[in-house]
Length: 118
Image 1 (tube, rainbow, N blue to C red):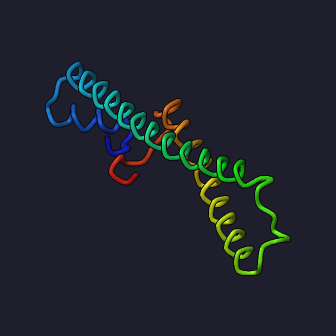
Image 2 (image 1 turned 120 degrees about the horizontal axis):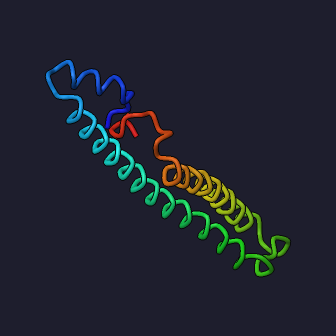
Image 3 (image 1 turned 180 degrees about the horizontal axis):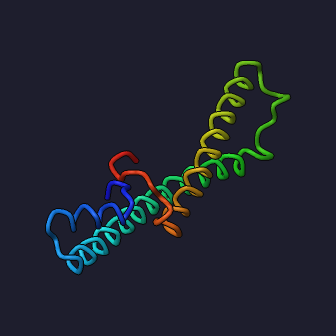
């Protein structure tokens, strides 16, 4: 659960009097729980990332062809461009969350950090 190497956890359990078969059983259960937790967090990241990406795409889809920057006064143009920049940053952040979530789902065993630190 805490990102420790499984061999060191097994050694710790056996050094404290836990039989090897019980230590292996407990270790397998802990690793399965850790993978489930990373997969759950991956689903949340995918939901957040896809919402941000879809929101950014919808903004640009609906504003494309409807916004004429040449006819806007300076303050309206500035507000639109500022909004567009914020939405692009949100979309890029969404893509990174989406990719991170996919890695959490597909390869949860590659995470070596503690669950509480993530």
